[in-house]
Length: 155
Image (cartoon, rainbow, N blue to C red; front, top):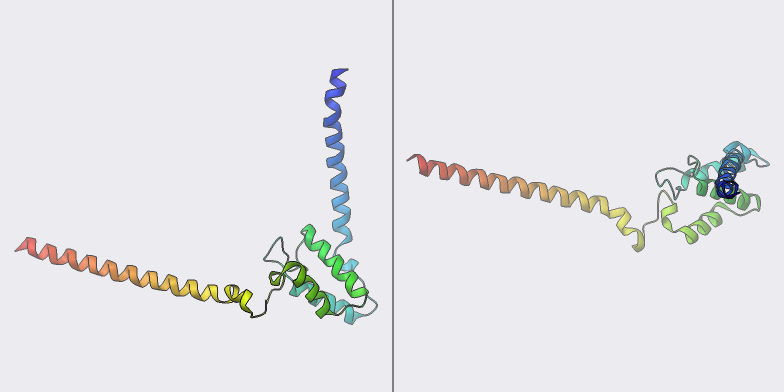
């Protein structure tokens, strides 16, 4: 009796794992780009362009179109539903920016809250160059002082 009772949670765990694999596979299959159909080719192209311009918040370096993350699939379905409901691209982008911030855009707008995103590469490059030059100058001073010390020892 205790053997059956102790193995019951393991059996339930195995069943839930197997069922979640089948459910997640069917969800992934249901959210491929081919599954999003519109009444005309223009809407289809607008949808594809829009999801290419938006960043996957999980992958961060992939567009919503390329990402297979669960959140990206959900966002594609949500964008599809919003476009089918007649919302414009601007309305959809504004909704996503309001919900997730400017990070969802591959090209965030230039404003005070995004100055760090825009200027940090240049600042880091200048700081790195300054540290490199400082290090080289310090190395030159050390080698000059060592050579002058060696000259005193020879005489």
